[in-house]
Image (cartoon, rainbow, N blue to C red; front, top):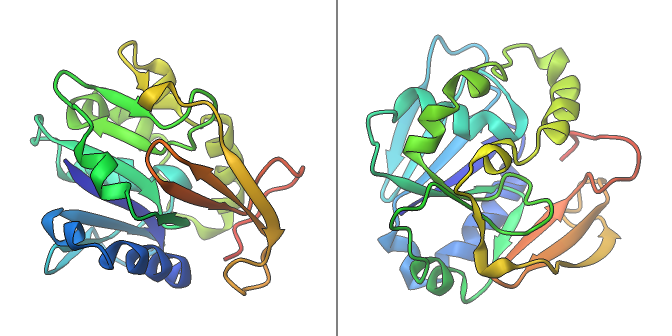
Length: 219
């Protein structure tokens, strides 16, 4: 299984915070990691660069939570036996994350969500499932910066779309209990966030949008 991090050109603080939480564990170097970075509108196409076990994919669109899934549908459709753990750059992993990830049996799995309720599109996807929903994903391809906030509202409405519409989807360890703290200015950037914890995979999600009535894309 590979790890995919959904990111954005302006999210360098969050991305580095996540990568640092991963690099301190020796298992980090045994995984192939894709960082899908949206917002490079001037690029004619995808720009791909590799640094050790991390492949950086610079995307000429920004589709919020769906950027990485779109990139997988367009670049890696032929990898039909592949599985990915998909997460946001606004996450942090705990000390048992890699151990828990390695223990997941992905045989005959099309998708696994991390929570019985909202999973924020975080979880395991097979490339076969992503290919099945390619047209839906391409419909989210946004190449206009001014439309990003509207796309954020759409993404929240369609959150977990692939999980919900996958008849074989399951929840990791039947988990349905997330603990949260805050809100605090977690990244010291002026944006208030709550921190949710998912013990079944040992991941923290640092959220700027938690149902407070308005959406933000601020870092």
